[in-house]
Image (tube, rainbow, N blue to C red; front, side):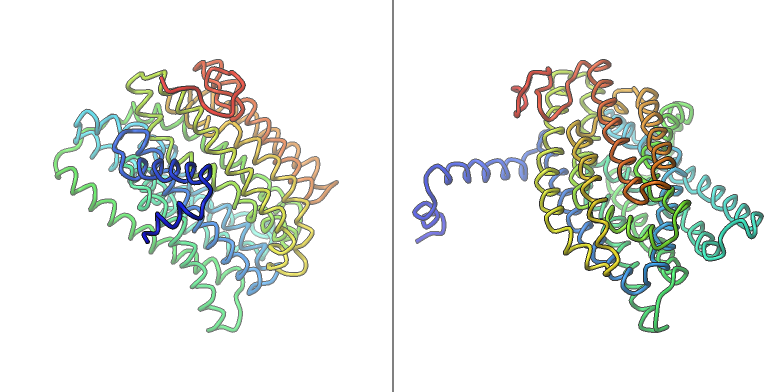
Length: 473
């Protein structure tokens, strides 16, 4: 008896029909060559990578917390979060501008423009990051005793990682623009955290323990190895598609798009990490450790949104550039559902398991459960509108999107400053969740007003209440 025959006998007919529909859908996604199938395939691959990344990140953070202790772990996460933020901002928006322009150049067969764009993005981001790192190190040394002693050496180590973090972000954008999700996401979200963990464990075995300086040194080495390896692979794949030749530069055009994106990305990263930074300024490293552990666990929920965002950007760019407004509205409506429903299911499971997950970090982390529940509300609010900021950016509304993030960031920082001294880490969670809800509302209203699209999980793209998107146009 064939396995399919056995399944038909054991599974009720109504469930078997749904399983067949799911099988046919997955088959269409896996084999389809149209834009929608490619976007869905990228979403699934990105989702799978983010699942693996979340698992690696969670395990590595648990092990680091156990190896380092609350204080050293708090110092490490504060500095590393700051380094990742500055490294991303060092790209000045070019890593996302690549996603905006490269699909258009590829569709037009403009190989010279593609070579010029990718070369400019790499060089510009590394030079910018190196300058920021140099200024940062000089500032730390000039401030002297103003900077707490236990932060000085870790901050300097983190500064040396900025050029490679920036280059890695550009290579990520280049790979996503070419629909290479594995090459785009694996280095940063799978390989680098694995190498950081391996370095920390080796240091613990060799030195008998790990402090923040050793952990950051391992992170620095892991970042250089990962980014240089990704650079070789991306350059090789580009060389297989586009032969070597002259380059054409449209620097002014790229900058005009990149700088608003820089503002958007800058506000976004500050918005999503301002809580950790402000907690680090106001509270001792031990409290930073508890808050970061809770936020890191909730990243298990947020990766759903990230996967959809990573997959949607190239298709948004294509639909906007070809003026297929009907398909654009339909696809935007779909991305909101792709973000919200999986986030709801995953989030409820994570909240239910919160006591067990927090206890893995150590006995002092259990109080982070309240922080997790508060953050979950903000994550759901954000997921309900999907990657609306990506749609606005690809449609040429970067400045409006930047203004939305600026307002949400201002709300976040003000509430953090007001609430943290009064409510401790719970105040930071309330501030962050409130800012995320404000951001989601403003993005939804902006997309509706500027593009005439209702990008919301509870309606179709025309704004009619519905749990399913309207028929594709």
